[in-house]
Length: 337
Image (tube, rainbow, N blue to C red):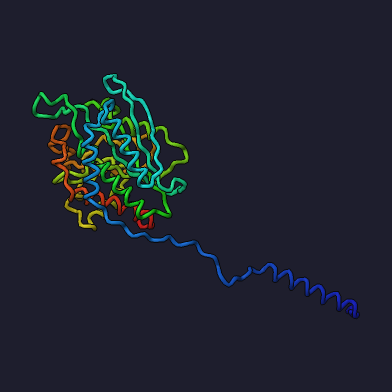
């Protein structure tokens, strides 16, 4: 046995104190207040004004058929730009040139309006704004080569988006970003079942979706096309179900829960070659197309005829499609979509 002296005992005491101090440092520090992530501020869904959407539709039609190369087409660009800027959006004009199926050179302009452009978490809403250059489905042969007003086929979708922009200015989004895109040269394609005709439609969305920055990654988009006619119904469009099934079903459930189930019917519709088709093909972004067709994919009797004028526009239909789309935006903001 080794006997320890006074010096040895002091050395052991110091050693024990050092071990205790080191042990205390290694213990996790307890704080009174653990910082928590800031909760999302829930925003109330604004009331969509069908009167305003109707007015914006009328103002577009009053310009005349928005056919590329016409004065009405030029005036429409100014109208959209001024309206969206007045509603607080950052607006960019995307100019491009495409050839129509018959070789005619067309100058197009996509209008891109952004809210909270710095936000990575974002979605987009879109519609086409041009109108058909010929009424090939007109019963009167003398009218077949004349342009149409495009009141529902073009103007109602834009009218709804302009009213949504107005509501966003009044009820700002805080946590997410939103883009509103108005596509040009959607309705200048060649009719017929030949697969090669598909690429002659949606020229503006083809250009936009093929020139996107790599860091632009919205969660999804919603396309509005022919969303304001009397007696309209909206089956679930085929390409939307194929490429954006979750978003499609959520939108239809949302509309039905708001009392619009007689328009947003729980039925599968045809697959329509529309702007969303090219966006999903080129940019791989899921897009839902809200479009008035029959379940078999047939359009209304006014489609591509002189009957596509303000007489067929219905405020109740504008209210249903507009309120539903506005609800999608705010549910997405609130984390409930």
